Every structure is written in C-alpha cells, then in structure tokens.
Length: 392
Ligand code: SAH
Image (cartoon, rainbow, N blue to C red; front, top):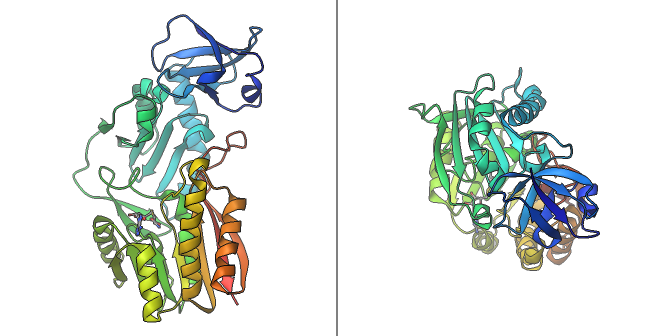
C-alpha cells in the first residue's frame, strides 16, 4: 500500500474527521501512487489515520474514503452507493416525486461524486481524481439500483480542472431513452435536459422550497427571479397565483420553461429574458409591485475569497426586491454560495432591508431538501441557505 505521512501537527483536521488533506500538510509519500490510487494516510509517528484517494495535481492531494483500514474496491462503492440510495428511498416511495439527489459528495462519504436520479435515469458527476479512477465501479453500483435503466456522466464542471482532469460527457450504462426525460416533483412535471442543462440538468435542492412557494402563492402577483426552467414559477401557478412573472438571462432555460408550463396544462407565466439586476430596476421605474418575490441566483461567491464582492451583489438584488414588495408582501431569498455562510447571508439581507427603508420580519429559515445533507465535519460544502422575509 502507498503511504502518505503528514507533517507534525498536521493530523488535527483528519482526527476531527475532516476528509481533505492539503498539499502543504504532507511530509513524505512512500510508494509510487498513480493519480486516483488509494493511499494510506499516517501521522508523523506512523499512526493510521485514513485510506484516501491520491490527487497530486490538486491542492487537495488526498480525499478520505474511510477512517478504517479497509480495501477500496467495487464492493466498497457498492456498499456506499446502496447506503446513500436507501436513505433517500422514503422521498420516492408513495410520493408524487421521482427525482432525488442520490449522492451528495463528501456528505455521503463519497468525495467528488454527485449523482442525481431523474425517474429511471441517473446523472453522475465525477469531480475528483479518486472518483474518476473508480468510474466503472461507481457506474455499476448506480446501475444496480432498482429501477435505474441508464447512467449518464456529466463530468464537465470547472472543478475537474483543479484535479488535472479533462471534461467527460456520455452514457456509462444503458443509452438515451429516445424521448425527452420527464420527472415529477410534488406532482408537477418538468423536462430535464441531462446532456445540456445546468449541472446535472435540474436544481433538486430547491424541491421542497418550490412546494413552499406553491403553498404561499394563492391570489398574489409572484415574481420568480433566476427562474431557470420555471421551477418556482410553475409552482406559483399551481398554487393559484394571480399572476406570475419569471426572469432568466438564458433563452434556452426559458424555452424549456414554456414546454414545462404546457406539460402541466398551466397558463404561461410572463417570461422575461433579461439580466435580473437590470430588470428589477426597470420594474422600479415602471412602478410595478409584487406580493411575493423569489430570488434564487447562481453562486456569486464560490469561496470565501469572493465573499466581499458577492455580498454587494446579494445586497443589491435583495434591496431592489424589498422595494418592489407590496406592504404585507414576502421575499423568498436564497444563496448557494460556499463562501457565504447563513449568518453572513442574514446580515446582508438585513442590510438590504435597512437601505430599502422597509420594516421586515424573518418568518422562516430555509434550507435544501433532505436529499442534500450537510456533514458537520465538512463546512466547505456548498449548501443552500434562505429566508422568508415579510415586509410590514
Ligand atoms: N430557481 C431555479 C434555479 C435557478 S439557477 C429553479 O428552481 O430551477 C440560476 C439561474 O440564474 C440560471 O438559470 C441562470 O441562467 C440564471 N442567471 C444567472 N445570472 C443571471 C442574471 N444576471 N440575470 C438573470 N438570470 C441569471
């Protein structure tokens, strides 16, 4: 077995079960591990710490597979994938939902592996050298899950570059079903473009928040900012909103949104292809107002280094949104930035309300659906945070 020995004192984070080893922590490497190979990680005094995947091109040179000395092989991936899938089964059984995240990376003890199930199809992202090395075992394990007919790889995220890996896209098991893939989420239908849509095709983390909006929407003029393929907008219509306006800068996303409205026999929202920052100002100038506003922007701060600039962007859209709310209206506002934690996000939104000159109460804190768990030992995860704020 190849061995990584850490510098004195650099075993602390692993002892706290944080699953990453940074390059600066390594004292020496014994053996000649190839990229993605399994290495044993030891402290200076030779104490066993973990088995991990070796990734020499990355700042994160090793990611932990297990805290026990055990073989990392096909059986290992079978067990982990089964375990993660079993935990999600209740979200599918007897429900009107057939799309869930099956594997949430480090949070499911599978660093670099993201897998989303869309009906009978799984889309997988292999984002680290270790995940890439075990492509076949991971694909087999996903393909063996009951009801899974095909597995598609969408490993085209930028983070692969940091691991020295080229993008990869294509069918790993089964093949295109020869039809658009349609999922059901709390009874609403959405077409998912797994080959060309964002990430793996759909933003499953917002599933339960979209249902929440449906329950709040009746009788209101609703504005869905950063609407993608209409996730929130169509839930507002399903919840008998008086009117729905949906903004996104992507023409493709809006085209898909139109199809999704038809699929559900819902009226078309007012679709606006525009930059949200500008469109909110246009609405202000037009004197338009809304009873409910959703802000679900892309991540403005991938890491803490981007937090300051991102804070200004979040503040700007939240301030504009508060100004567009009718008295008694509510804002559902989110951030999925890894570089901005829930506390900071709340401060930014509070600052926006202050500058907008409105009195606002937080009615609830929002988070990702339960198939996106957050491991307590892994605060770096990009987790969703949100607030429902009601204006006086
Ligand atoms: N709410 C969506 C997911 C939003 S993802 C859902 O429930 O499915 C973020 C979206 O913001 C993407 O569709 C992207 O095209 C869009 N976007 C990014 N920057 C934008 C901008 N400046 N103005 C408008 N849309 C933008």
